[in-house]
Length: 115
Image (cartoon, rainbow, N blue to C red; front, side, top):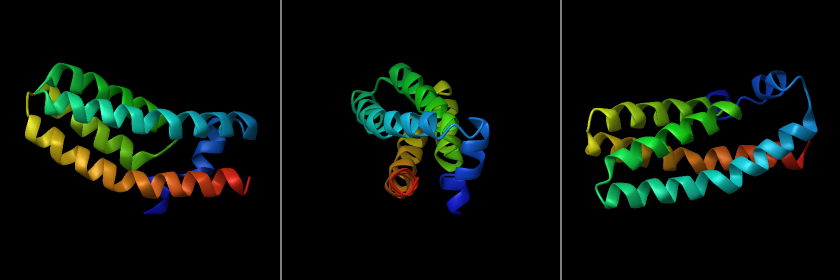
């Protein structure tokens, strides 16, 4: 399951093993992802499914860049649910997303600090 959360081999390979770029992308993810999650939570609280769908799409892209595949899958499910107007499913997947985000963050910090 760790590979699904953050696949370091695939991540480095996608960057031609550029560790400096990898560290920059991890730092950007660690800074931006929690902010986007908070914005998505607020959009859902406001019932703004359009903004929620856009934020889910943004999260999907961010997760893809760093190869956090499980988070990316959940973000994709949120995006599709949002496009279908299913606010409850978006909320459900967001709960799953945030539940995995702490583990992903820990894996990324470990990778960055041991790099």
